[in-house]
Amino acid sequence: MTRRHPLRARSLAACTAAMGAALLLAAPAVPQAVPAPAPASRATATPPVLTVSVTARYPHDTTAFTEGLIWRDGALYESVGYEGRSDVRRVRLTDGKVMARATIPAAQFGEGLAAWKGELVSLTWHDGVAHRWDAHTLKPTGENRYTGEGWGLASDAQGFILGDGSPTLRFLDPVSFAERRRIGVHMPDGRSVDQINELEMVDGALFANVWRTPFILRIDPADGRVTGIVDLRPLVAEVKARNPDAVLNGIAYDPVGKRLFVTGKLWPTLFEIRLTPAIAPKR
Image: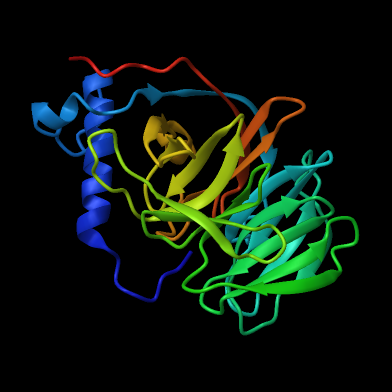
């Protein structure tokens, strides 16, 4: 997403350094652009690194500023941002064709997307409005209100998980959006991680894009601890995006076919990937 407020440079740098440290410890041949390892006392607490292999590539709309991505009932759904251009759409996987769409009010910036029973729910960045849509027709069915910014949204068996770009993730009632509990995303040594963006539940773990980094975090939804770092730098390098806003963002999981999809804002490709066994950091 394009942010109009200053980037939280210090915390983002710390986050990237922590993830870079884990990668350096696990694989010495990391490009020099990755920050230097953390001190040994912290490095011992870095989570394992998961690399990926690409099992399929599909076309993706290069005008889609991807904010949310989900797989539901055999179809891909995507929420797209920018004021005046935000929508929620059903997309055909094989060729990226938009099969149906619902338009978000022009003054609002569309954000994260999740499903609950027969509905889709999409966030807005600054307006505190969660739009509810019929999953089959994409017709509006209602709204919920929430405080603060809306960035990422996911759902589990109990309700929704909402992120606002900070380390805090809120667990919400699926009907009223009332907060039930919250967690803080943190590395194993306790350091907080912010810039948490798109969210997706994958086999009981919470996956999260970290804005403007080529990494996805695997998070324990019970306590917010980062249990793994997915390294997607090869995909970012393949895309070769020139627009600085065309960052990795978008995670969808097909629990029936056990397929994991990722893409980015304005990317030409949606990748189906497989995670390789975790690489434990060297001690």
